Image (tube, rainbow, N blue to C red):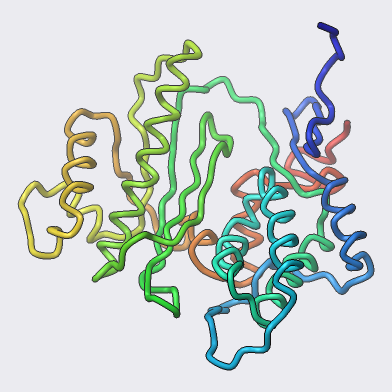
Length: 299
């Protein structure tokens, strides 16, 4: 074995250290991708997906190069390891790998234009002595998929105030109400945080604080607290008992949160550039060459 010193670059992921913490990015990977696709001189945009965009498979859609589409989406999905801002856009375009059309390729090109705007954007893991606090923000977009009317779930998990994992995924079944869609999203996020809690315990951090699960849907939160069976909850009965059990055991709590503060909103729908930028700052995402809250990052 050979000591190569502090980690700086591994499988396309760049690791930088400073007095503020550890910064992960894939700047070189993003620039190489823009160069290979001929998008180095493109006009940059502020969001990876157009606000309010709903993609679908149209009957007479203009076909595009299927192989090129799949290669581009695959390259972008690897870039998402340090770019949670791409999660929703990639979740949408990856649903059409089998039959992409011109509108789907345009959506992929927009993601590349967004990369041109800030190729060095990444995640900052700031120093924090409270490593035992676990939080998760969950959200769902009810019946948002045009093709099959399935809902999209999304969650962000934080350990010690730092973003650790995230996901944007279309639900496997059709939800009959927004509360049902949100409830399935809550169960998905809770499973992730329970796994993180066990991982921290294996590392020697025995957390005695309850997991804080933030959901902005009042009906879903009321169902979680209410043990009475209703017609509207019989479709999510297993998830209901699962969440109720964790609430009774004081493993999780459901603090109130306003819809405008729900970070997971950008994982379930295409939002405006103003909302998108505001949430990225709260997620701890920044550019290695851009000013931060504590000044300019220096590595």
